[in-house]
Length: 246
Image 1 (tube, rainbow, N blue to C red):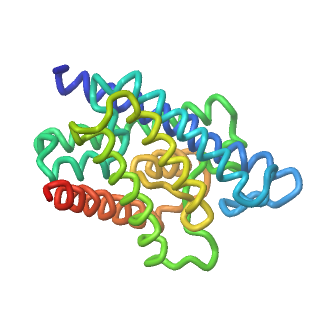
Image 2: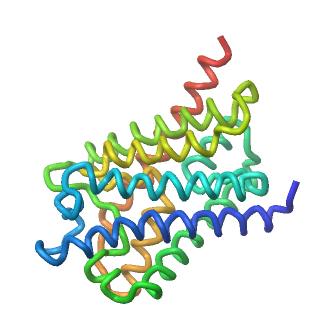
């Protein structure tokens, strides 16, 4: 097994790529919409493709990136790429508790670096117009509703991870593809509810770099993306252990 520092580097790089391409695709969607609509975090869904088409496109970018990272770096670190996944695996004793903080810090640093790199690549419009793809609950969605939506979507994601990646009985070779497609599906389904984070680090990166570079200040919503994903992932892992033991 690789050293903890090597595995943390892999987690950081993987999460960097996830945010650079995935959240970057959300930012680009807002930038494309800015030509005909005032760009706000809520314009996705009325942009170039309209309706769920925008979210499907964004979801597929996340899906492909996640699959690529799992197949390339999964053998190094497990490719958690998500604090909720790491915490759920630690709660069910499948990941060392004393390494959890290191993984979570690496994921958050990687996410912030991904957002910063995207801003440097695209320019300030990525920040001021695209908000670096930051997530926020859409108009009419209350705080509790947003937490519930994030928890349910992450529950599905973690349940799939348990079934295709964690369970030794799973057929080999398909985990990266199925996990990526699950993320893409959950983003398409819940994007217009919460922005479909499912991942505390994915939201943290754009929030932090937006704050540094003068983008939107959305920190009031950050607890949604801590509580929802972590609760959903932990419940899914515990549920899977219960039913798989039968």
